[in-house]
Length: 153
Image 1 (cartoon, rainbow, N blue to C red):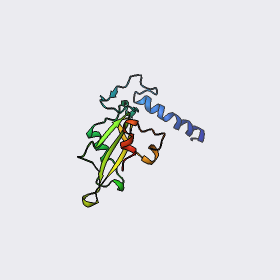
Image 2 (image 1 turned 90 degrees about the horizontal axis):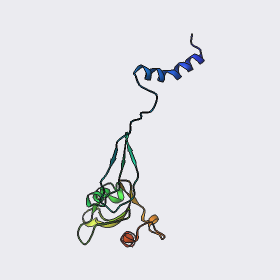
Image 3 (image 1 turned 90 degrees about the vertical axis):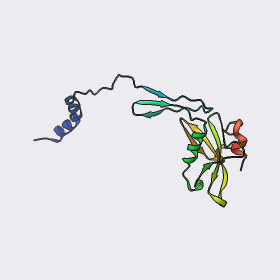
Image 4 (image 1 turned 30 degrees about the vertical axis):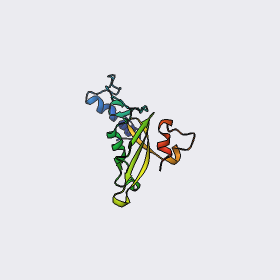
């Protein structure tokens, strides 16, 4: 008959016995995981490692039209319904030192307006920031884009 003590010992040993039965080991592997890195040609400099399985991925958010357009499409709140990167009339985005500013058309038809969105690079991603929090001086927003990011609409 099993006592509570015998049951506790059996449950404690079950994982070890199962691992031994399949020829495994209870120690960590000593092989070195491969490292994946991005080729980055942008002005963004923030890097944060992102773990994906056993590989480590690092990189910086790229300051390209494709990446900023993706960041615009990632805006999901109802305040940004039908958001699209503005076109015509000058640059629609600009980046400096891990920050980006973009002019975004929101809405459609007569209801469409252009608004300013500020992002900060976090690893490979552009994360939208609250201008009310990042613009007051002393600001984290780089001087090279401060006026566009904080002194527009």
